[in-house]
Length: 352
Ligand code: FES
Ligand SMILES: [Fe+2]
Image (cartoon, rainbow, N blue to C red; front, side, top):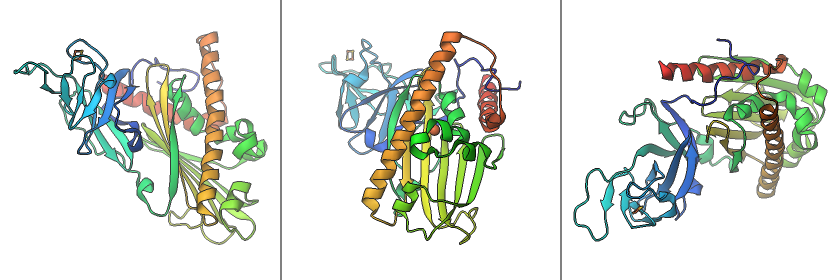
């Protein structure tokens, strides 16, 4: 089936046998974290020895959310009658009762921390091991980059964020006051869209252009610059690389290129059929006044993402208000439509 923006598939199922982002490492503190992912209410926590855990957020005794409990050693103690659960969901202790029945257990999900991202495996069969390692994102651990990020909750389905991030043309309209600049430059810049059965790649280069204010503040460019914008979509996350070198100084399509970089990580995980979580970080390598420049880059990124949130939530509210109606595709929809076909294909693979 040709899946496009104008023919949305039923939003009530998500591809499984996949890793999804459940949070960032720094969100796991001395308190359990409640978070619903793929319609599953979970409690996430880190044990005293540093292991990360994800359990169904429901005590098997009388169904209190376990996220209202407290962390204790290698487990989580329910806040009602004190049952203690290990990271595998098994009840370890029932206060005042010597024997713990083996069925005293809550469902656990496989959770792994990698490069400061907390990944949760959602498998078709909870007893089977993950089919792959969680995705790597070494930028978070590179000494060459400073980064920060945040978690946004969206009153909109996850695919509307995919659409937005894969379409650079909105910069000139939505982000006019931040990174946008001239709308016609963004609409008319040459763009290459490619990909395979699991990813979409959008590449755009802009040669011999004026450095935007953020760039000149961060990096000692001599004069004009050659810029790149590279987007890579994967089911659970997108990576967006932008940056620039002095015009004519080196090839912009060389992965080892120097210059100024802004590298965005965008983890997008459904919460429910109509809401989602957006986990983002921005990493950069400023030369001039690194601390202040990074703060500035993060602040501008945040403003930009706030602008997107306003648009996307308004878009979804209006889609609901008007109900199912055909929508018209235009040239900027090529990459978003590819991503939709991938999501649909993976969803169908799961339902076979
Ligand atoms: S509800 Fe959790 S211990 Fe009773
Ligand atoms: Fe945007």
